[in-house]
Image (cartoon, rainbow, N blue to C red; front, side, top):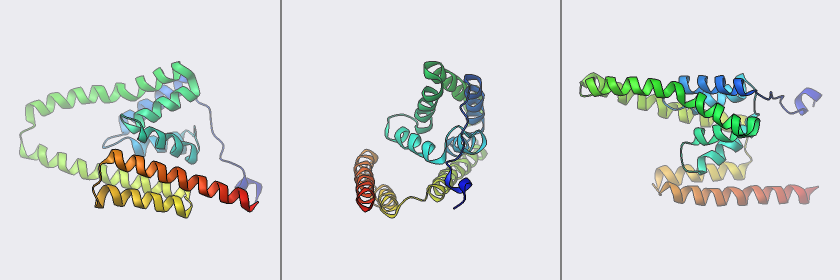
Amino acid sequence: MSPAESSPPQTHTPTLTELFWGYVKIGLLGFGGVGPIARHVIVVERKWLTEREYAEILGLGQVLPGPNVGNSSIMIGRRFGGMAGVLSVTAGFYSGPLCILLCLALFYDRFGQEPGVERFMHGIAAAAAGMVLGTAMKMAGKLKPPPEILVVGLLTVFAAFVLRMPLYFVVLLAGALGIGAATWRATRMTGAR
């Protein structure tokens, strides 16, 4: 293995201004869900976090109440800029979408009952679902989770979509299983040394 392959990916520590404009971009381009664009901007384009760091923060953001990328943005802002970073990412993240949402609300109030608008909304919902699934597959491919963690992920999907278990129960159960699997793997790897 060459030194370039063994070294961790290089990341860049953003300034408050970079955090603000990065999250303005995420907020404005995140139609149908900001997950895919947030990952792209934070990990691929700006290199603020590695794929693993982003996945860990996003995972924590998903088990907290509220929007997962919003929760994650607060953690990222805090990490890089303290309270000023939190305020910077929050202002950037929500300012553009708020303006667009106000305009769309006025438009929908006026034209929402038209048949074309309903078809448009159904199409957008389908595209958003595809974006979420595509991002999950991209992240799983890059992270290369060990088999036991992959099994926990598949069990989570099965419990939520096939068995239709309540999401709070799925999160608690999958979280416990995931922690158990990661602990088991770490113990096994430490014992193998």
